[in-house]
Image 1 (cartoon, rainbow, N blue to C red):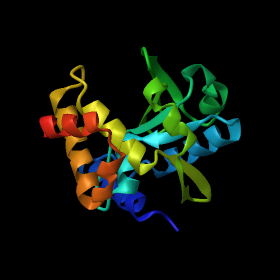
Image 2: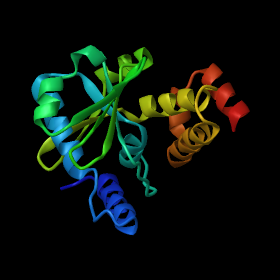
Image 3: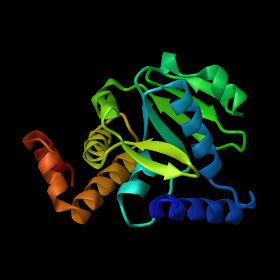
Image 4: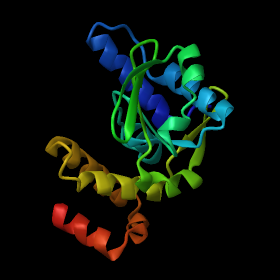
Length: 190
């Protein structure tokens, strides 16, 4: 059985692509293939960003890309990714971008701030594959950090902060996972 949030996100993907005249594709096959490759290679990882939010929040949400946190970019199983139909796009300071065979953007990040969160992901099943996803408290902290980063586009920061607020509204005890400094930051930003 597919996770309800993922299923809704995949249906939104199909609608998005259909409206653009791209057929009715979704991130589902790319995500399942990617997870299989990473698990088989023993790569420590977790889904972050919009896909993680789909799993942790009931309101419908989708994202155009797949974001994955890894311990080290240099440990990516590049040969396996290439053999699996993924293509390298470019490398940046803390990230590496790829595309699936059907054009889904994939971003791997080895941001050190996420390393401890990689030790406690949750598992979600998709088509017989285990998808490792950032745990909800870790997602909350990461969204807050991203939402307060002045280097990010304002619209992206606002979306991250809206995601933080939505997570807390749906589960108020999540605010307990924040430090006093993080709570003050959220109060100032929101």
